Image (cartoon, rainbow, N blue to C red; front, side):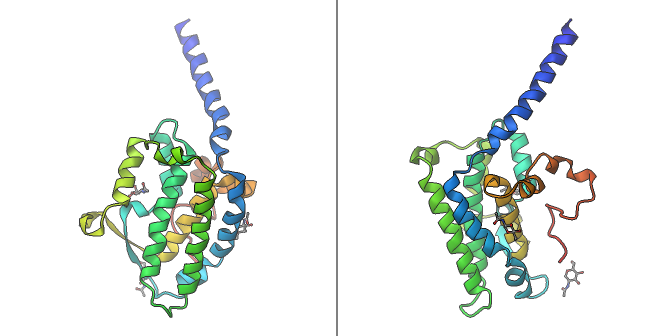
Length: 222
Ligand SMILES: *[C@@H]1O[C@H](CO)[C@@H](O)[C@H](O)[C@H]1NC(C)=O
Ligand SMILES: *[C@@H]1O[C@H](CO)[C@@H](O)[C@H](O)[C@H]1NC(C)=O
Ligand SMILES: *[C@@H]1O[C@H](CO)[C@@H](O)[C@H](O)[C@H]1NC(C)=O
């Protein structure tokens, strides 16, 4: 008897998870899709501008928390109960505005990728503008879950206060790949179903078993 109700409970839990998933995923205001697509257009040239125009194995110093990948998203969703996508979206903006700034900072005015990156940043800010406009201001004052707040605090730390062990060396291409892949996941309503499933769908959890051509976690060898 006890066993039976336990399994009913379990089943209920599973069903609940499945039913919740689509709800959690509809969190991008439609007005964001146009600027996101414009940003996506720029991102399609990232190999040329973020890789070919830089020396082989060139990397820049970033905070550990500025490495924000799909695996971070799935880990946070597991770790933080009822994590609102909006929180992850805020974190995405916070991380990537810093990342873009750091990439621009290493390029002289005449670097062949300079104007590309400046445009990328402009388009990123356009998306952010629409994001901020399309939510009530209170949303941005809401307390963050503890784990996210901790990450946030590290991200906003002054560089001279960051411990040596919290710096990472990462290639600009890999940083922009992270920006792009997590964008497909966190703003999935603006991208097509296939993109969504590849980057953030249920199939993401099963990817490990397949020999997927698109490894989400490491930079594709290209
Ligand atoms: C985003 O860009 C990729 C190419 O990098 C393209 O295949 C895809 O269709 C674009 N998605 C949208 C919604 O514009
Ligand atoms: C770049 O990094 C790879 C992998 O660490 C290494 O095998 C290769 O020799 C490096 N190339 C140069 C030019 O430093
Ligand atoms: C993503 O995960 C890596 C590896 O665990 C970690 O170092 C990094 O701080 C995480 N990034 C964020 C934004 O939490």
